Length: 73
View 1 (spheres, rainbow, N blue to C red):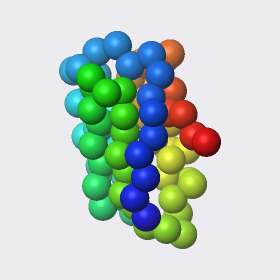
View 2: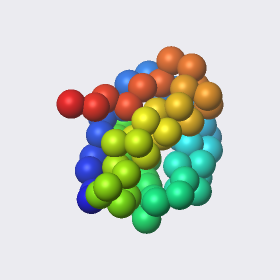
View 3: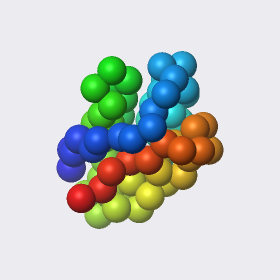
């Protein structure tokens, strides 16, 4: 499954790169890209584990930038 999510309070391009690399390293992720200027995360991962992977990505973002959030609708 591949989805694009809005992100809020992403304030640093370097931090966005750190998040992107950490999310790519998650088990089950086949692709991840963060566009700092558009404040978007594009995530491609296993369908069966997608929600769990999004939750893990959310934790990674908060660890790098405590105010940053992935907007899940």
